[in-house]
Each structure stands twice: as structure tokens, then as C-alpha cells.
Image (cartoon, rainbow, N blue to C red):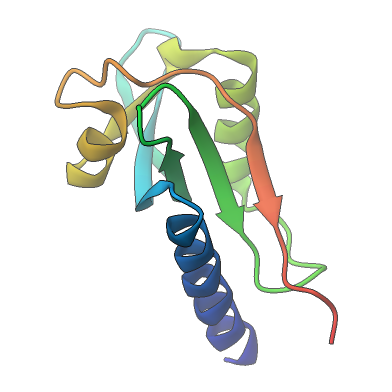
Length: 123
């Protein structure tokens, strides 16, 4: 329960800090995992935030963990390397937040990128 509370507070504080720094912050962006045949596998991962610069030219991917030791989940371990390597044929963003993050239903702004994992300071 403590980690859950810390995690929610940490994510909210980070989103607000990025907004204050001039980024458009789109929370909880879902990405479906596709099979080698391009068909949905039924598995997905959720990025804690996608940040867009005001001009829309720069996109950053963020994962906010609740502690110094919190690990990425199995699906995050699957999706994040594909996103970073540019294997976008195996990934399909989905949902209203994804459309906001990537420029509409066709997701023209979806592109490879590093997923930055941010953790709260040790108290």
C-alpha cells in the first residue's frame, strides 16, 4: 500500500514538474504488443507519460517507479526495448491518450525513443 501511495504521488509530482517546464504531458499511454504476423497478442504495456514539446517535434517516454528497487514488469521488459530499438511494427499505441500523444488515430507521431525510468529520491 505504501509503495502504491508513494508511486501515485511521485508520478503526479513528476507530471506537474514537466508541465511546469513547458511540456505537454499525456498520462498513461497504452501500447499493444503485436505478434510477428502483425496481429494483436492481447498483451499491452502502459507508459506512465508521454511528453511532447510545444512544437510537437520532440517526444519523450517516461516510466515513474515508486522506489529505488521497483522493477519493470514483464510486459514493460518486452515493450520498452522494442520502442528503443525502433521495432515499431510489433507495437501499436491504442486509446484516446495515445491519439493525443501521437497526433490522431493513425498515430503519425509514434516513433522510437528511450524510455526514461525515474525514481523518487531515497529518504
